[in-house]
Length: 319
Image 1 (cartoon, rainbow, N blue to C red):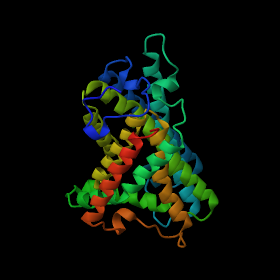
Image 2: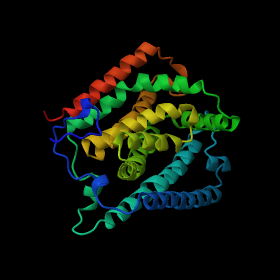
Image 3: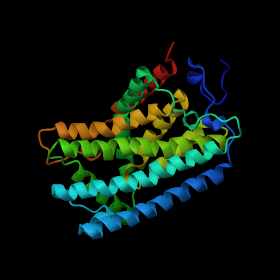
C-alpha cells in the first residue's frame, strides 16, 4: 500500500484496504458544516430544555433538577427523574442534531452518492478483533488518563469552574447509586449507550471528519477534535484526561474506518464504571477513581507503552 506521508513510521502499513473515507468525499465548506452542527445542537438543546421544563412543572418535580442539581443521597424517585431529564437532553442535543447534520452532509454529495451509512462508515460490523482491541486500548490507557487528571488538578481554575465541577460530580455520584436492576439498566442506557452513540456521532462523525478536510495533517485534526470533545463536557478539572480519551476514540475511527469501533470502545469505557459500582458490596457510596487513586509516573509511563503496543496491534489487524 502506498505510504501516507502524514503518518509517523510506526503507522505506515495498513493491512485492510481503505474504503473511501468521509473526509475524502466532496462536501460543503467546513465552516458551513460546523455552523450547521452548532445551530442544530443549540436548537435541540433549547427544545429539550423546554420539554424538560414542561415535564418538571406538570409533574411537580424539584426544579433544581433542571440545572442537574441533585444531592448525592437523593431518593430513588428523584434519581429516576434526573435520568429522564438528562436522557432527553443528551438524545436531543447530540443524537438528533448529529444525525441531521450527517444526513445533510450525505445529501450534499454529488450523484452517484453512497448510502448514508457508507458516509458515516457504519454499514459494516467491525469484527470482534477490532472491537476487542478498541476496548483494550481504552482499558490500558486508564492509568495514563488518571495521571493526566492529577496534572490537571495542579492547574488553578476559577471558582465558577470549580462549582460546575462539584455540581457535575454530585450528579454523577447520585446517579451511580443503584438499588435494583432497573436503575442499573437505566444507567447503562443513560451513562454508557446514549453518550457512546450521540457523542461519537457529533465529535467523530461530524467534527473530526470536517477538521480532517480542512487540516492537511490528520494528527492535528485528531488533537483539535479531541480538545473540542473535552471542552464540551464542561468539566475542566479533567480536561487533559478527556483530551486523551477523545484522541484515542478519534484515532480508532480514523484508523479502522469504522464508526462502530469508537462507539463500542466509548460504551465499554463508560459502562465499566456503572457495572463496577453495581457489582460492589456498598451500593450507597461511589468510588471516584479520579479523586481517590494516585498514579505514580512510572505506572503512567507503562500505560503509555501499552497504549502504543495496542495501537500497533490494531494497525496489524488482519495480517
